[in-house]
Image (cartoon, rainbow, N blue to C red; front, side):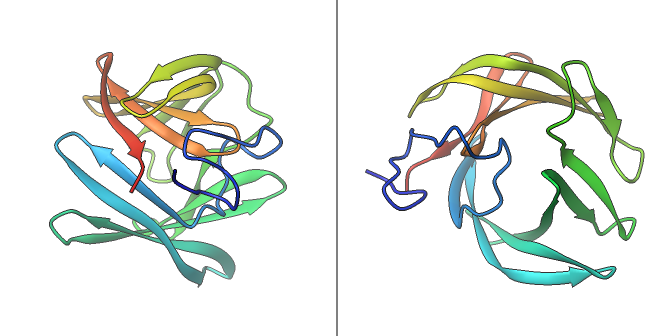
Length: 165
């Protein structure tokens, strides 16, 4: 059994939580033929706003950082490229809503709130799906209420998912 939050098993969720909770301390995320550990390492102020700082440590040892914050239910990601933010999720968005990244190089579209996803570890229901189009790359990211990110498909094939560790 794997505990994301105290008393919560790996495939369980808390429905009253956000689709994009930023309080889960550690996740193991499989990506194609490798994996990374995503861990909260603290808080960091960027452009006068406080973000939760995540380290994403890949299997081979490289580390990248991600900065997220929540304000009035909206999740923002600080984009180092542009010294500004991109909205990652806004609970007021409806099916079909589209928005761009801070650098205008990629576009997100909220596809649905009712998708299912089968991974090697869990069968998820009632997921939101957000499509990311970045040049020729197109990904569909799946999020479960109370847990957040659970997997990614590319061209209909599961290429990523959370895993117990």
